[in-house]
Length: 431
Ligand code: AMP
Ligand code: GLY
Image (cartoon, rainbow, N blue to C red; front, top):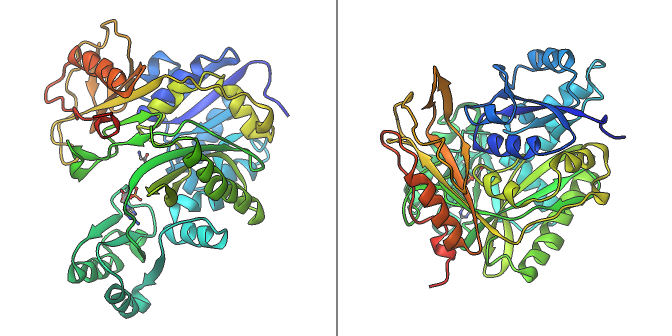
């Protein structure tokens, strides 16, 4: 099976990741029309924004039919965890329109930490030791905390808007957190709690495309999660990213491939989990050995803003391979250049922040790719509309060169309270 000669694409989502996808999809000669729902001010220059909620599947279906959509690309996890793939295949009117993303069962790899841990153990994939607790066996949870050493890693089982992981140094605090979580701190998302062994090392994000039979490993990336320089302060959606990651040399990536990626794809097959999409594996490099911290069932944000710019091949061709089980024969050319992205956020983020601030300087000629995250159009202005506002991506021969190119571009863009980290990639640069 193939796409028709010219392809109409619907891309779901509204962040920097989706702006990067829209930019890459719009470059494909195979695309006739690209719609982004709901999109942002940046996706507008790649296609047509549609005011539609990606989790309202009935509305999405109507749109797909009335606009002759041939391909649906899902950016965020929410529609996947809510079963958009299954909704399409179980409806005769739209069952032949491919959705890039896993089935609801596959999406549990992100939607349930307990499910993901079980999957890893079952298929021999290296990960931290763990135990899962509910209100019914909370006493066993307290006993378990007594038997392990600090730091204590507690994870809400379900999706908790990126806030479900707590790492504590103190035993009593860990017990209190377990109790708070199990009694509704994150609602139903924390009715089960995973407690796991602390892994020390450096994190890296590995991205895999799969058609359910074979896989391709996309460029890896490192992201910077904390608001403050030196990785301090509160967790955010991500303040920057770089690709490639120097410690991911051939030997390390070969371990990732044989110990993690292959058993993951084989495990999906063995468990009959339908998966035509991206797997984002959050890894810890523990002294040269990779261990899985988490699976996500979508691309990362802001990692996508450096991963896609390094892919030279046609993305729609890759989607065709993912959708129709012909990924093996598809080309995946990757530039050796480094890509770095620096995220500009609103003042106050990740806490409360003002929206609707005018962004100036966006029309200035630069060498960077200025992806929009939280922006919208108001009259003739582009204004801030989220915590993460822009992801400014640049290429370079080294990490230093790439990030410096982004800082030069950021200097030309202005809005009240603009904040960004000035140490993106610094930990990976030679002394
Ligand atoms: P998550 O919200 O699942 O992305 O987790 C947030 C962060 O917690 C991860 O990116 C890691 O930095 C950290 N983390 C999660 N699990 C562990 C672990 N077992 N050991 C050390 N750090 C962890
Ligand atoms: N950058 C981490 C994520 O997308 O979850």
